Image (tube, rainbow over all chains, first blue to last red; front, side, top):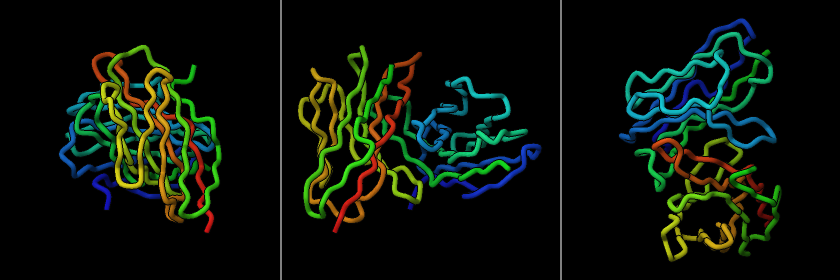
Length: 114
Length: 116
């Protein structure tokens, strides 16, 4: 059983919709991450939060808006997405951001944009 | 330039045999961490093994071992006695320093299929 829970598991939305992805970690970790995984591409780091503060934003389009209200919860707000945004979105957490810290991942949300 | 290179898009192995998955990395840092993850078809990324840049001994975790050759910047994963449940994508990753924290970078992955 994973200590990182993502909801929903699957999401289909139109380009004009607004939706949110949710991630919750039960591991007491201080760092949380959003990744995008597309077919035939490396895992893309989108955002990193440490103790609710955003510390990394890898040139992600503004139609993706993260929110970290506390160290256990992370959201990814979506609006006016494009078909190329269809992908698996993975949330992860780690104890901190040190070099020896493995990440614990959720099952992901598979997003399809119509 | 790619930070993590996994040159084997796909690998096949017979059940109970050992298999080596290749990973090379590129960094000028002295302090960094190397990781391997497994991703079954269900999608969840599972942490397997970690090697620190200052560790002199190769890491081992059960049937997994990491063949760390620092001078060659190589961190190959060795799976001994393969099982059917080992069929999955395997990702090599590195954490190196970036603005006060250690940001993870992943390779493109290797698909492993274990035959009965």
